[in-house]
Image (cartoon, rainbow, N blue to C red; front, side, top):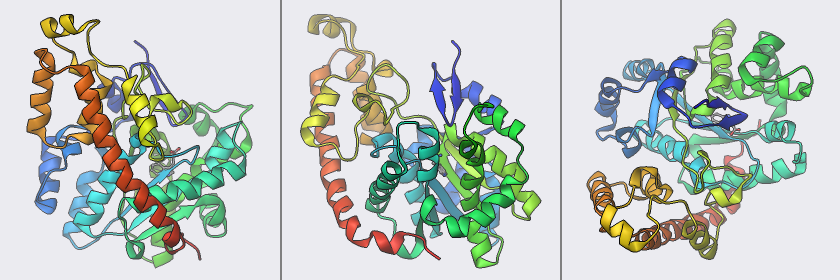
Length: 370
Ligand code: TRP
């Protein structure tokens, strides 16, 4: 079946192996993971489970680090709505790298992008969500002394001179072919990728010292960084390295969670009742009747509830495998499995939401300003 992945459209059943080839990424193999583990002393479950599946120049980042040349981390968020659990994947992984390597972290929030690309959102809307989404990143535990949050429209004075350096070297025909933009696309959207390139070298500019950059991100964002990697050496900066995660599954049939379809995802702002309702009606690999399920067993590999455990809510590999087997043997029923997941999600959200509210008071310490 045909599929399509760009930063602005994900459709069809994504074949990740094919996509890796198409994009020109390197599969994240065990050799690279071993190299990383030499520094981190443990392997993150998202690596073990191939939730992070590909990279560009990740080995180079490790080699530079070993030489004493510290990288900085960069990732971001397009504030089109509240944050959902899928957004947390690369952020949680980034937090792990941030703790292990003790490096700086830059987080870009692109209120300009979501305004330009979404006909329904005003700049007021996207700027509002920029501030809301910032709370989620702070709630994950990043510290203000090593973290800078860059909201595009609020840092334009610093970013614009850098963005135009990039823009001058990117042609309209490249933007058309990489992002699927057209002659009738608005000219802000055509310019936008140069804004997403900026945090990959802005820290170097500010420090007056060239530093390696590592970008953990959802695989759909790679087209932006292909362009960035093309241009930065022409400006005297190294190509940023990157590491890509697969999409977090939707609760319904489509294969990516979406902020524009609230029923497909759990948001960090959802209350316990909403979570119960969403998980309660999620697509499972269960059978028509209890009797049939006891006889034939469930199908965890096509079950969105099981995937929630896999992606975030059961970090113990052994326990996860036991759960898979119990389900397959017809010994674990969907109702029980859902009830337990609802519990785990609500426990997580209760604590996350508390930290989110506390973050409001300190947000200013994180926001980058000249
Ligand atoms: N374009 C991204 C989005 O729509 C936001 C973003 C900006 C980003 N810079 C990034 C994502 C760096 C990952 C890494 O969500």
